Length: 284
Image 1 (cartoon, rainbow, N blue to C red):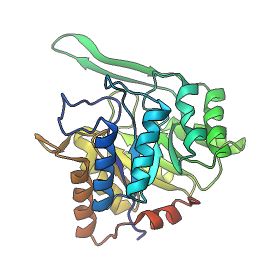
Image 2: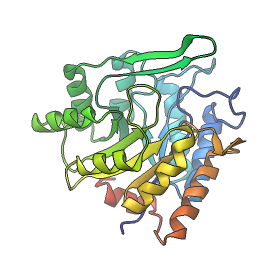
Image 3: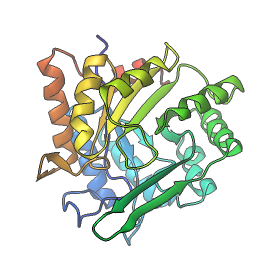
Image 4: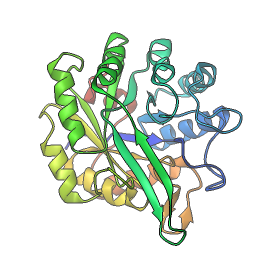
């Protein structure tokens, strides 16, 4: 079986230190935890940034400090988020691509709804629409293509795969493709079941690579199925602030260490960043 690539999503744009005091928010904290994750066995670090008020930001100065800091410490593949701060205008989010020309960047390939209803309070406590049309999807694709950045194709709904195929048909995406199946977000998102994951894997081009990310309590169950199926794994405090039921994670490296143990138990080796670049067809 192919070696396992571990991607760690360090921060995200939703959780804060009020949820888990060990969440990295400042550039120095993000850099430190990225390095610790690399030491633990992660090949990819998925990067978001926060401003001084702890709000999601795409400020190139803040991102630049994080990216440069990680590059100075290790050879991890840096995956820049272009969709996590979706309330920020698309043009501002995409400035990161020509500015830094990252090896990998996330690309949410569609539109969708996320929501959570508080039945006790009888109100929506999360109610968000990701609005993107096909012209914008093509713009994102071609920006990455022109700057030598491989898209990490974020699949929240099975219909997103149809969008990927359309973008490939018009030449805005080039094979081999790399997919990230995001499972378990409340709302218009794939239910986190083994059956659904197998269906997704069977729906993508045969020469593609893929990883899966389970949200919240689904992080490690989805990781376990993914490891057995031969895919790659994303974990981290963007996706879950708990390392086990009721136990807050002390760091992102804890997630990586747990996945390494899971893989070791079935005899699957962990890919180094150099090996991950070869598997993902990333030209360094």
